[in-house]
Image 1 (spheres, rainbow, N blue to C red):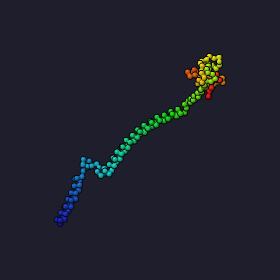
Image 2 (cartoon, helix red, strand yellow):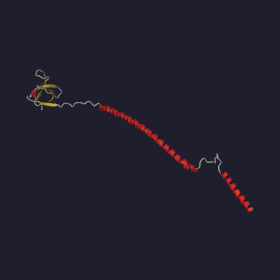
Image 3 (cartoon, rainbow, N blue to C red):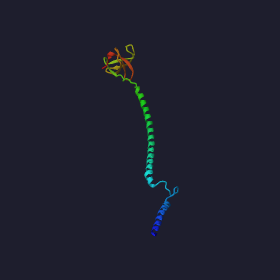
Image 4 (spheres, rainbow, N blue to C red):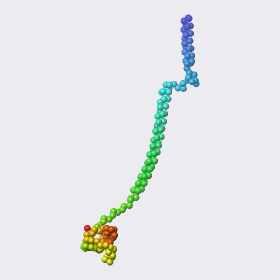
Length: 167
C-alpha cells in the first residue's frame, strides 16, 4: 500500500507541478513578456502584405510620373494641333501666282548703215539716237509699222518695222 500512496503522491505532484509550471512560465496578458503576434503569424500573414504595400507605393510613384508625362504630352499635342490648324489655313489660301515674265524679243538693225530711233511712232517725232547696221536691241512691243524698242542704256524709243529684223 505504501507503494500505492507513493505512486499517488508522485502522480499528484507531477500533474499539479506541470500545471503550475506552465502557468509560471507563460507570459501574463498585458505584460511586456506577452507578444502581440507570433513570429510564424508575422512571416506567414503580415510580411507578404507589407511587401505588397511597398509594391503598391512604388506603383503609385510610377503612376504620378506617368501622369506628369501625360500632361506634358497633352500640352505638346495641343501646340501641334494649333500649328496644324495654322498650316491648314495657309494652305487654304494659295499664294498669289505671279505670271512668268514674257520672253524677251531681240531684233537686229537692217536695211541701212545708220537708222534713227525716235521718241514716238512716226517721222515727225524727235530722234533720240542712231543705231548702226546689225545692232542688237530688245523689242518691247511689235507694231505693224513701228516697233517699240529698249536700248542698252534702258531708254525706250521707236524704229520703223522695215529697218528691224526680228528672228
